[in-house]
View (cartoon, rainbow, N blue to C red):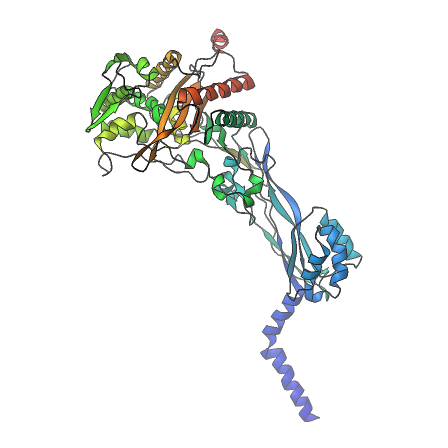
Amino acid sequence: MVAAALVITVRLGYWQMVRHDDLNKLALNLRERTITDYARRGDILTGDGVLLATDIYSYEVAAHPKLIDNPKEQAQVLAPVLNLSEAELVQKLSSQESTVMLTLNAPVNAGKELTALRNAGKIGAIDFIAKPNRRYPGSSLAAHVIGFASASREGAYGVEQYYDEILRGRDGQIRAEADAIGDETLPFDLPQGSPAFDGSSIVLTLNSAIQNIAERELARGVQEFNAKSGQILILEPRTGKILALASFPAPDVNAFATTKIDAYADPVVSLPYEPGSVFKAITLATGLDSGKISRGVVLNDPGAVIIGGRTIYNSDRRGYGNVDLVTAMAKSLNVIASKIALATGAKTFYQYLHDFGFGSLSNVDLAGEIPGTVKNPGDGIWYESDLGTNSFGQGIATTPLQMANALAVIANGGNLMRPYIVDRIIHPDGSVEVRSPRVLRRVLKPETANAVTDILSKSILTESTNKANLPGYKITGKTGTAQIPVPGGYDPKWTIASFGGYFPADNPQYVILVKIDRPQKSPWGSQVASPIFAAVAQQIAQLTGLPPDDVRNKIK
């Protein structure tokens, strides 16, 4: 008896002392459950309250097969609740794994039904927890602005990626103990885990009606001219607010799992292009603001000019003799643009380009922005001939956002604004963080901006092929027909047709840039992009009740 007692004592000492930690950990793993308490990702809304992104709850349902004695019976009652086949459930419930996932997306009413089945004793060893799933009520509306949240709830592209940390919140944990068969949570003295903190909601600067106008007219224009794609950007020039940002084609954001990932990249901020003659508005502004040319200057156009050993021609290969600035812009003369850049001088010209924001990030609050490319004297890749070609938007790479924001500098009287797309952030505690306009720097003197506006407004009226005229309103703008660079030169067939402008000319409220890629029916910006600009501008004026010029002038 003493020997037996000694053996038992030694054995108990072994289990109680030597194996204590191992056994204690094993016991905890058997009875203790840790379940993720998911944070709700913040909503994304337009400035006028239209919901673009939100979380809708469904249930994750998991089972512990080793604790289930009747997999077939449980499968029968679970199948209609989870919308799964009995055969599939029997297979999962008969697994040798300690835990198997039955479904990640049980319907929202499954929670109540599963609770009732558990209380009735019809199921056991089943865990279920509500999990939010990202949904986009507008499908493709503002798709490139929004981006998407992946299955792992991480933001990708657009606002979802840029503001991911603010939107996602922080998941919590629920800790509890289960009974012997693993299906009841018992109120033992265990820590309750950490609470979830919901994400903040974001209100965009977008206006849903203006966004719809831009998307509708862009799709119509791309289809009418058999183009490959296109973009429209609408800015408020005095603040930098983005009122609409549209790219076509646009993906259904809800179908991100089955859509090619590059379809969500936003061409407005991430796809560089050579802007073509729209850029002449910038060249004109640099010449006037630097004092190298005057408003009333007359320049001679012999039809060609040689810069750095390269001969630059007008698009029609014609010369127009002595012309003023209005005529030069109306006929979009490459020779005159080159002469303005020559008069300005390389150092001053490129300093202005950088002041306008070309070649650097605008720091817009959208993911994926690129800086574009501006070659500079002395950097080893710049040649003197670049001064001429850059003056009319060739050999320089910009994004549609940079181009539109540069036009906004002229429209607002000379200030470069930081463009932004989030107007305010609403935190879970109800506090609101409002984003304000920010001036980055002054680029032009107000009188220069006024002079450029006057010249471009008059040139539009005299450009016979232009279709951007807006009855009742004086507009300012410039067409662009840009070649597309390919290895060894430029594509001989395709162009990018664009129009950048703003209205009303005397008090600009909206900057609109229209860009159409590879149109087949016509290569010209005046024929392709200009009518889209006019259609968008007219509908915006009607939507907002903007009085025509004569009415506003009478009120003044």
